[in-house]
Image (cartoon, rainbow, N blue to C red; front, top):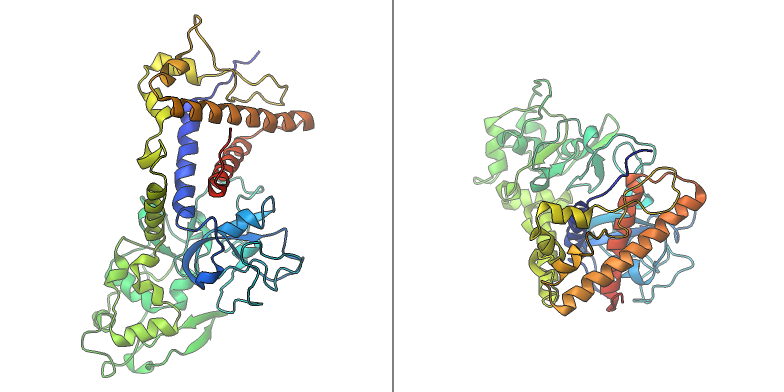
Amino acid sequence: MSEEQTVSLVDVLKEDEELEEEASAVLAGSDSDHCSYPQGYVKRQALYACNSCRPKGGEAAGVCLACSYKCHEGHDLFELYTKRNFRCDCGNRKFTELQCKLQPEKEELNLLNKYSHNFFGVYCTCSRPYPDPEDQVEDEMIQCVVCEDWLHGRHLGRVVPDCVELQEMICELCMNRNSFLWTYAAAAQLSAPGAAVQVKEERDADESNTNLPIKEEKGDEVIEPSCKRSREEAEPSCRLMELQTIGQKRVQSGAVFWPSGWRSKLCSCTTCKECLSEAGLSFLLDESDTVLAYENKGKTNEQRQQGHDPRQQGHDPLMSALDNLNHVQQLEIIHVPVLHIELPVQLPVLYNVQRQQGHDTLMSALDNLNHVQQLEIIHGYNDMKTELKDFLQRFAEEGKVVTPDDIRQFFEQQSRKRRRDEAGGFYPT
């Protein structure tokens, strides 16, 4: 008989906590109780696309966080992370059989909304879903700050740098559509690791003018902004013109990763502002447009609203209690036997915490907490144990193999349920 497989409760809790923090950073910046429609085109918010409500062959549509909870509960939703300058579509003309419960009175269409294939549940240049059941390659998805599409790291045309979460990425397609960005990338020496050395000839300055001509180049729409103009038409303080005069070169291929604070180094002269506005890129001059700024705002909002929460400021009483135990005591608590269900494979689950010599070390750890904290932890643990058992029972009944992705999906669902319960103002008992 094969050795019994076990799982560390600490590892599970830490992974769940990381998922919770990541989700909270995104969702806490949006209103979970009120439809965002009255706010107009919101600067940045969490969005969802409902696959259940969209008729076959129907138009792309997006709904806000609150509507995903109140109007689309239990539906097949595509999580879109965040999008900028978007107005909630819930219940408008695109939803033929749904009326928004939170904001019924809406215009038929939001004409300024921008949509992509993300709203149909596919991402990247490969137009595949995420997670992709047919993709066996572990790969991270990174969002372009211009088109806001999500791309696989292996499809960026370059090596993904370390500390990517502290940088912003612009995909190669968006770089080529807004070719003046290559000038900034060259000046910042943002090279493409692993790429062959290649230099493109600069066009003469007198070949461009102060307008924003759009021309077809190899099938892609290339925007040549007015920032690429003659010396006489440029303002004396135009940083972009100075960089173009210097003529620094770099490989113009692959996605570009921009370091923190790069937006502040873009030229903000009158002409460049007009150029960015006409190209729909004014947001590049706005530091508060970044996802990082949005997430920091969400974290601040969450801390302010959860002053009573024992997990405030990242403090988890259960994790703290476990940290106070030695390694042997932790193993007694966190190594638990496989659930007694005949599964195709044995799987480590949280079930029947072991006791040794009649002494329960988990209860000893709980003794260091106050009564309210103890109840919160015990109730939460028991609820999770029951739901996990029910979740696994379905696999046993259907004879299906349980994979790590299935377990990860379970805990993501648990996190979403908790956020929904908190948004609704009630708590599990």
